[in-house]
Length: 264
Image 1 (cartoon, rainbow, N blue to C red):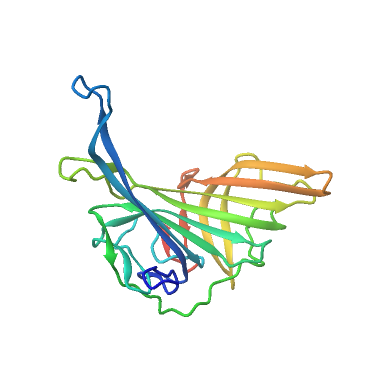
Image 2: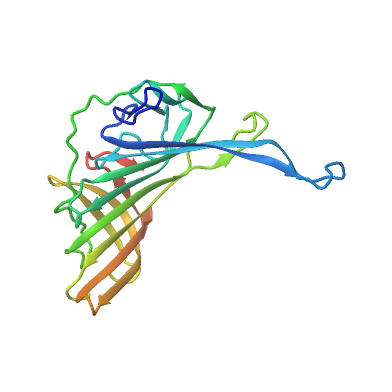
């Protein structure tokens, strides 16, 4: 590789373990107009700016979860990359995936956006000094009726962060902490068409191995979709649900495998 081409080997995100990739997008939405003096041409000028990003990794509990303000530093081994100012980023969504049938590791994706300030490209330093030992998805379970033959599952934690632009943000879209939400989906093989009841409200447990689990209390089942593959001889189904903080007046919670509440 040419000396002036940056390698992805040795890259990292500050404070995160087993990162697979990071990506940033700096976005500009120019002001646009046509007037009597523009000779039929469209005019554009600097308008509203924004930035958003994502990083993915192996593991069941990333160090930053939705609704948290943090400093993002994404770096390469050449100490190049991008840096947000302190507390300049806010986490919007965490997606955790279990690819049981594929025999892979448990994976996560963290989606974040501008909370305050600009993102800076250039010199950046971050490292991962942890021991790589992510959990595998094999044999992980979900505690829903009929889901014993689980193929894959996904859980999303969401902070519905409101965005705003004012005279003090210098044309930049910024965000603050919003309401908490979540959802899940799973794919199964099925033998007897036994599924959760329509609109059933459940305390859903997502196993991560060694007796540990994510808990979403409560979730309402929103999709049950069996599919009989006659030619292939397979009976399978998709299930999905969405978080609700209360059920029949009882307050729920979303709790990590370490026993820490993400909500409330």
